[in-house]
Image: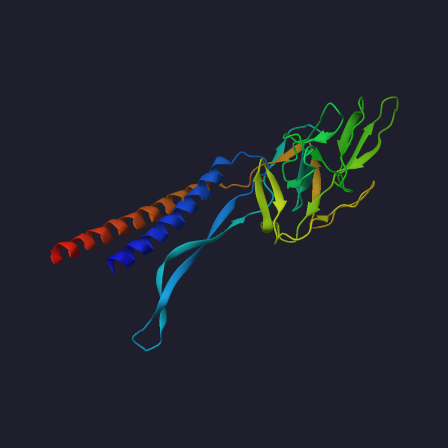
Amino acid sequence: MAADMMYTALSGLDTFNSALSVVSDNIANANTTGFKCNTVDFGDLVSGLISTADGAPTAQGVGSSVLGITSDFTTGSEIQTGNWSDLMIQGTGFFSVENPTSNAVSYTRDGAFSVNSAGLLTDESGNDALDSAGNTITIAAGTTDLSVDQFGNITGIAPGATTATYIDTIGITTFSNPNGLVREGKNDYTPGPNAGAPIIANPAGQGGATSDTGGTIISGALEGSNVDLTAQMVNLIDYQADYQANSKSIETGNTLLQTVVNLIR
């Protein structure tokens, strides 16, 4: 019985160690642009059936486990920057970016874009932002009065011109199951097998409107993390207490085993 207690408590230690890691990651990314808070889904472990007083068999519990980690994809706070190429999606969509070396496409909520020396709109990792047709976005040198409307349409005054004209439409992509996306680091996601196929929420071409599920774009702002530090600190205290309780159970089980061994001697 003491051994069962130790194994059960050990599963609890593993479970709450994982939970503490998730909470620590949330706290560490409280100021990360576009970061989505994660929560741990717990599940119980059972062994064989045992008899009860009323004769109906039931399964004996043998600890806990982590069933999975779920991300909260609600929109974070709006951080005003005043820079036309800083973009925030008010909704559930993602920006599409492409690695210029591998041509691998990933998806992000971090809209901190800028125009590089080649005139391409890129993110802070050097990935190229993609338009609603899946192509890179080029801004001609010398273009002034650049702006992005709520539908992702980029306009600006070309060199030698006097009025603003349409340049391109930055794409907004959605997924039927955002929790099927895989975190790749640097604010990027790639589709996992359960994410569903990428869906372009705003069609290519001037005037294309986003769908209700994709959201709209706010120019001159970035999306802050949606981590609630108060809630995370409460979770941290709770998980630490649970971890310590399971640790104490292992100590108690060890004491009982030592007592049994001494009796045999």
